[in-house]
Image 1: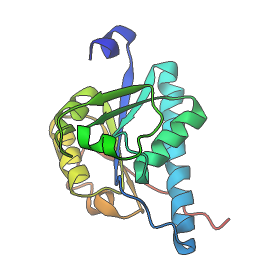
Image 2: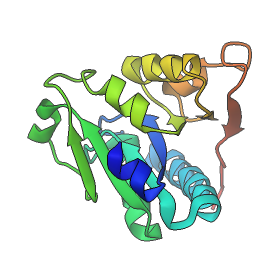
Image 3: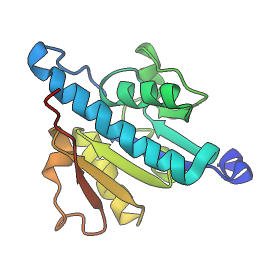
Length: 173
C-alpha cells in the first residue's frame, strides 16, 4: 500500500477461475474470445492510466489468471499477485510484485480487495463470487465480463446495480 501510494499506482484486480480451462478444440473459440475481451479491457486501462496501471490477480498461472498475466507481459503492463502460501505450490505467473498472504485459498481476499482500486470479473467460482460481492459492498468499481460462464454470468444489473456489464466478443474467425 505504501508503494502504491508513493508511486500513484492504479491497481485493477482481475478475478476469475484459476483452474485449468478445458483446452479441447470445441472450446478454442471461447478461449480466443476471452483473451480478446480481456485484452481490450486491459488496453482501455492502459490508455487511461499509462504506466501507473498495475494488474493484480491471484498469481497462479492457469485459467483466467494465466490470460491476464500473459496479456500484461505482451502489453507491457506491470503485474502483481496477491496469493496464499499454498498457491506457491503451483506454477506462478511472471509478475513484478508478489504479495503472499495467509496459507489457504481465500486468506488473501481481504488484502487483494483492499489493494485494488477496481475489478474485472471473467468467469469465476465461489471465491470470485464472494470477492465481487465484497468489492461491491466496498463501493469499488466493477466490470462484469459475461458470456464465458462461471460467477460472472450469474450476476445481473439488479444484483450489482453499480457494476458495468459487458459481453465478450464472439468471433467466427
